Image (cartoon, rainbow, N blue to C red; front, top):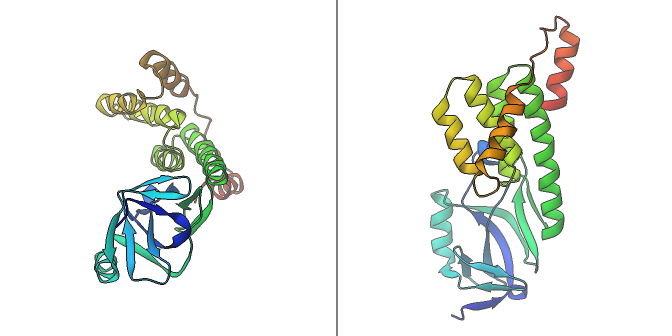
Length: 211
């Protein structure tokens, strides 16, 4: 088999690396099949423009075995593979296959939305929900340093210095430690509002921010 496969010869039949509910939304690697054939391509591979480079080829019997073991997820209907497209799952596990630039914009928008909800939950001292929303923001945008800083602030409020240091370590590729500490301090300084008695306001908050 050639180590360079034109994407126009392929269709998308599913994806590998299945996600849990804590790991979406996120990008997933497609599982390809040669159109009209019983040969499939699975990761690891490199997508470069209109080509799949150095993929692993397996037959459909192997694909079905992997699907039975939940190592890959198959779609009910395949669809044509496209150059410069990206496959991602939303928080309801609905797949989206669109131009890479559009996918990145949509995921960034979702990340900002989750981050907003995480910040609101933190202000109300709902640390579990804040952490869940911040994790979703990172799933949508792994470079979301603000979410890592908020998670560090959550660990600080929980008196968990080891967890706070872990968040700082995860942020190192994107932000120096001194700047990250300033960001964590800014979140930690947030003053919690007084308890709100109104159930109406509380319900509105949940509808606006929580999944």
